[in-house]
Amino acid sequence: MYFSREMQEASLKLSRKWEDNVQKSLKNNPDQKARFTTVSDKEIRRLYTPEDIKDINFAEEIGVPGEFPYLRGNQVTGYRGRYWTFRMFSGMGSAQDTNNRWQMLLREGQTGLSTAFDFPTLMGYDSDSPKALGEVGKCGVAIDTLEDFLALMEGIPMDEVTTSMTINPPATVLLAMYCAAADIKGVPLSKIGGTIQNDMLKEFIAQKTFMCPPEPSVKLISDTVEFCTKSVPRWNTISVSGYHIREAGSTAIQELAFTLRDGIEYVEDVIRRKGLNVDEFAPRLSFFFNSHIDFFEEICKMRAARRMWAKIMRDRFHAKDPRSLWLRFHTQTAGCSLTAQQPYNNVIRTTVEALAAVLGGTQSLHTNSLDEVLCLPSEHAVEIALRTQQILAEETGVANTIDPLGGSYFIEALTNEIEEAAWDYIHKIDDLGGMIAAIEKGFPQMEISEAAYRFQQQLDAGEKTMVGVNKYATNSTHPLPLVDIDEKVSEEQIKRLKDVRRKRDNKAVKKSLDDIRGACKKGDNVMPCCIDAVKNLATLQEICDVYREVYGEYKDPGLY
Image (cartoon, rainbow, N blue to C red; front, top):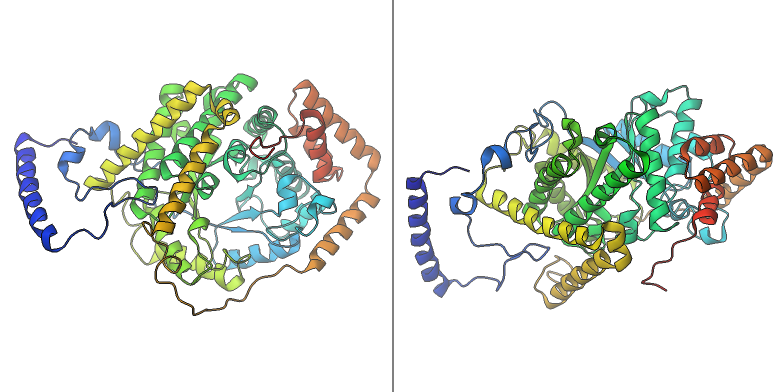
């Protein structure tokens, strides 16, 4: 950022005069805290001035929207041409239950679907597995076979509405079901659009839903990238996720650094394993960030993420297609910031976090419901959460101009500081041999654990505040109606599963599973075999059990 010598001298003179006044004021009005920090414990100075951004080259480091380094956004007109996608994360009970919620949200103005699966589905087990006992449909929708998936998509125009699926170890199976469902409904694969999370590295780092070890897990992910690049061109093949890293207790800088380094690992693997040119697949990579309660830190994190990824793709991978340089991301407000105490406060938290995501330039947004800390969201609570986005978009004026906080001394300085610290982490992981090697050494896991412990210590000591928890707590209660999934959901789901097993052609199922087994052993792409298998009504667990058999099961070294 260019400032003339006269401007700099005038600024310094004003700053010195202001500092003198501050020292006088502090005698009568001392600071309320010994340290002023972000929620991630990054120290924030009292005032930011032109001196803090005097070395910024505007053209190279800030620029304009739609141009490198994309700090101010990928789209040249920002939200003026189109709002971010209102994509509420939804899943509960049976496929029909979730379809009903989806239909309600679409009627109320949601513009994209997002799928929450139950725990057995997330882990690659069928609803009648002993490991699924008590969990069927409880934290999301239960999907065992293609028939469940077809019920989930009933009445959904798959060539018009994009769908996100938050699934990781069994991602190949759920993507196969989506492709098979489209084919059955007569929708060409070239017309379907959506995103599959498909990010196992962050599972090893933070969320801990495991199936196979890291190396074969990444191989399966590269299979989906290769398949979609050739056959499903509108599909986002990976949603490289920082959200769960942050939910596990990381700082904003750790979330940013570990997420981008995971992205690097995936790009390297696809190039090495599949021989694809980076520009063939990089435009369909996407990201997923947490928008936490520290308003300015989150905005700066998102701006820094775009600039860093553009530099990574240009300088590290020599991408030529501008779309390869775009960091496109979905955002979810911070689940870990919600409190069971005084739950109506969560509406305010979610609003602030959503505003930060919008000012940070997100392409897609989920706003948490006020009751999510207690149960699956009620219809009333999820409507409030959706209306929060609609009010931000259509009443507040925040979409009128692009990157409205750009140029702020504080915003630009903090963006630079966050980026610099994130680069330090990325270089450290490079030195360790990459992200898989770093995970095997426990590096990111330990960094997150220590950050979470520090934050909890600060909460316990009152250095950080959670309103209604360690400050302004009261004994009064405001009971909420809790959503409860009836045990009949499990009984009916298991009955449907058994009916499918009785009526299907089990010889065709066996052959399909043998084909997947062979592809795994030979290193071939499993996706065509998976699509055939789900069309033959092979179950989720039957396919995942082949993966476990061939690749082995991963055990977290921290637990054994």
